[in-house]
Image 1: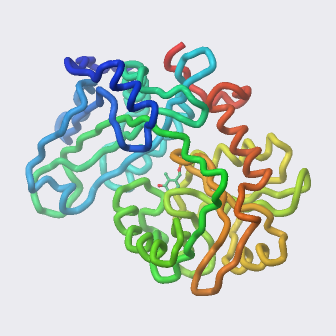
Image 2: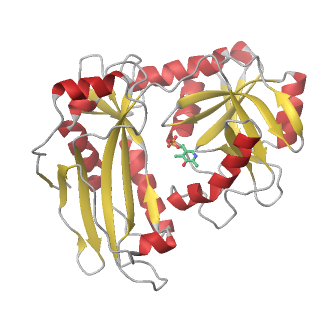
Length: 364
Ligand SMILES: *Cc1c(COP(=O)(O)O)cnc(C)c1O
């Protein structure tokens, strides 16, 4: 099914010179492109025609439900410059499917997969000049949806707004410094039956106080452990975790199993395949904090990295917690971390063969 998006180009796009200046140092979430996509939903009429138009503030009644009860979801995906000068999206169908699952969990309407894909295609095409050129750089796309019914009654909204915005993103990778993490025993990110599997703003709102504690402890990020037994490693901030056991071709690459309280990352899923393609043994299983500490101390765990769309792969070094402090590796990214990162980034940028058909070419 093809849905159509009404295209109303901005009458005040930034000049080529200003855009070039911004793209020279893109940062992340610092600049937004000239356009956005908007579609409205109501229980009575379903989805309206989506419109691509000039990026602009929106106006909402103070009693709009999202401000009071947090009924909101989002996604994050990237468009990458290709060697032929074209632009490709990485696995947008997977983001579309997860967006629909998040919507269901938050009692929001499911955006049709085709509309999600068409909206990202349209925005990337219109704002293609905003896709940076260098390897590791990208155009980050942020689809989101929230309750727009006006009223303070607590119930699923009968109106919602879908929006899509885009921001150029610098290459995040810091090859000198592995991330230092704080394993939080005080706070919980997600409990069985909760919203841990959904990509919703509320999960982040609830996590910020732990992030503050981590910073006070001199750490960059929080690592979450399970809510019930308080011993199983789940994920790190907004990223999934990987542990490498052993060395060279004998290494096993493993990641905590999806139990319903972890966010099922698309980068995580892609790395399961990439690591296996590279010849490593790959496992999804429960990893306890004790396994981590003992493995780091004995040297059995040789590398740890976190992964997600925004930063792709980030090495993890020191872990601090109420149970002590321990270090994995020497503070620099390990060889398998680097190999996986470079392979994935190569696929995304079209320099490594895309054997799994993960790229969606938007522009040639
Ligand atoms: C988005 C997100 C991830 C990573 O998912 P990707 O699809 O790889 O970007 C991991 N954990 C949390 C909590 C997230 O919100």
